[in-house]
Image (cartoon, rainbow, N blue to C red; front, side):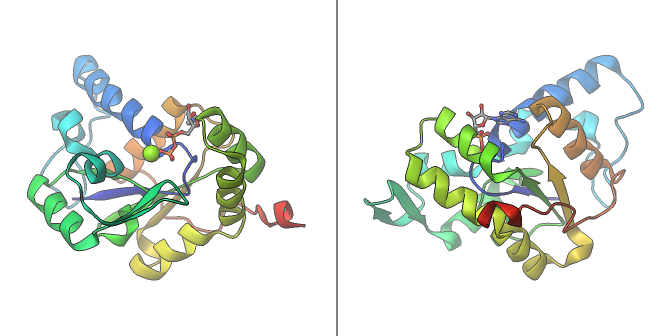
Amino acid sequence: MRVAVTGTPGTGKTTATTALADRFDAIVEAGTSTAAAIVDGEATVDELTEDDICHLNDLIESESLYTDVDEDRDSVIADMDALESVVDDRAPVVVDSHLAHHLPADRVVVLRCEPNELARRLRERGEVAEKAHENAESEALDVILAEAVESHGMESVYEIDTTERTPDDVADRIVDVLTGEREPSAGTVDFVGYLQ
Ligand code: ADP
Ligand code: MG
């Protein structure tokens, strides 16, 4: 079982999937029945640890899994083939990255965020205004959602609006995707007003 957690930069993927690691621990400690079996998978949520979560963007940097460096954008062009084989080797259950939906996955979580709030979050993280604006526009246009649906089909996509949710709240919803307690969804938000 692999769950991709994707979304426009700034939607809170890394923050929510980091909170998810704490959820795994909390579930184990509480010994509750929330630790339902992952549908069609071998692991149950209570067997998962931090190591089952892969923050792909960190991996791209630490293992130099890129083909080019984009100086203007202060970013790299990921080597998707190399990335795919490294991820296959490590076999994480959760893959966090705005590129995660480009890799094979059983379920794809697409985190969403209202564009003005998204730009605020990116500025808070230290990104320049231009990059924040570019990503806000891309979020308003549903770019990543559309890519995820095109690659994986509506039945595998789970949209989660993070705009007014805490990272813990978002992590809880990702747990529901892992355990099969959440129904697939796409097109539940409408941020197109941002473009007008
Ligand atoms: P991503 O990994 O999707 O690019 P990050 O997890 O790095 O996004 O979060 C981007 C910024 O938004 C960070 O400054 C983070 O503290 C903030 N943030 C993340 N999730 C939330 C949330 N649910 N509510 C408010 N701020 C958030
Ligand atoms: Mg991130």
